[in-house]
Image 1 (cartoon, rainbow, N blue to C red):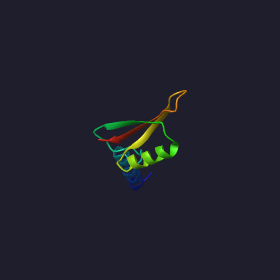
Image 2: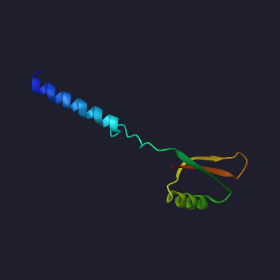
Image 3: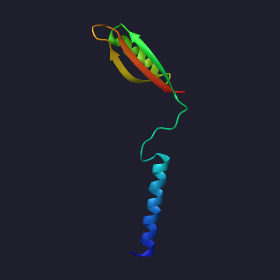
Image 4: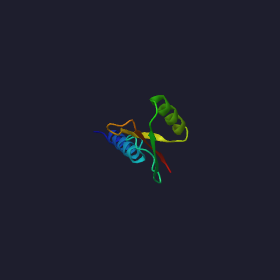
Length: 83
């Protein structure tokens, strides 16, 4: 290999390594100072849940889990957002 070709390969290697370090390639989320959580318990039709979730989404809340208690109409919605 010629010297200029080796230089180009080295430059690309450094560039790709820098992209990994900055999270561009890995798609990592920005570092936060933590999370805060909310839990909603609903005994209502699903249309009410959709309305509640849309409203909370406007405030930065993200749905992470939905659980239902066996033999019950109680549904729990777990949300989080960055502090």
